[in-house]
Image 1 (cartoon, helix red, strand yellow):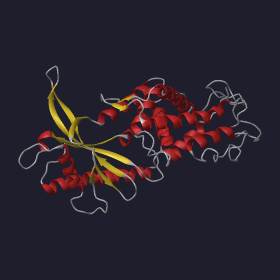
Image 2 (cartoon, rainbow, N blue to C red):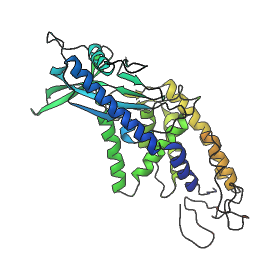
Image 3 (cartoon, rainbow, N blue to C red):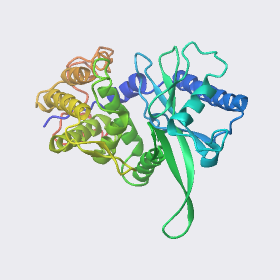
Image 4 (tube, rainbow, N blue to C red):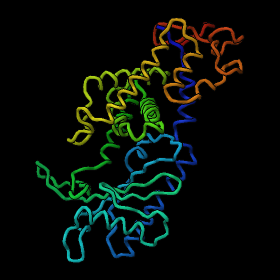
Length: 354
């Protein structure tokens, strides 16, 4: 099986086309902080108690958000209230809908936004003219007693007409714990985060976004089937996708990382769509295994997979644009030898590289 090292191209794609820029991150962080201030001011204005804490969660907190040409970004910022602070003027507990409505009213109390906050089934959403939005899930903190008699707390989400046991911070802890464990061993948790983001980028092309599965489903699939490859993000990505494809061909049921409810059930339409797209991408990448494959063909295959021209547009070491030579000093042959394993070696006698 041929193996042309495309790690540098994949790294550049991740850096320039996948990861959010510092300016984007700064802008969203400022919007999030301004939203927290607006919530606090609105609750004060209405004479309502403040949440015990407001905590970012989801892909924003896990640092797995990816660039979107339409600025279609979702920032989750959960508001956690003491149970006794979610009561009406008569001391009766607020319904889940009333709790969300209270937060919504606080976010739009001064009427400054052209697009006011609105109540959704699982959160309060504030949309911004730039394209992205901040979702504020509303939680209540319920004191409980554990089986061993210890006093503890349970977190319940205002979901629809019910208070549902849930705490999205647990998903963040789950993911970050995996990253930390990988970094303590021989694998690389940073590579898993990159593979997660690359997989989400693959799934979120404009004509797929409404049809494909959620970011948390993709994150769970990558975490379950991550295939580490030292200094080779291209191999790690492809091998992880192969493992995910095998799993999804067997079953689309997907367990939640921390809750008892599943993320997806057997036959889930959006996860099936993602599986079919992934299978098609892997079919395209089979061209990488040809014994006589060129760097140009490898780049073209990754371009097709990600619906881009980024890989083919990368300059080679001779100042060209990724021709069949792939960057040899004289432009006549590849700067690496084509091997049959995961280790690509320079043809000048050098050792392993990536």
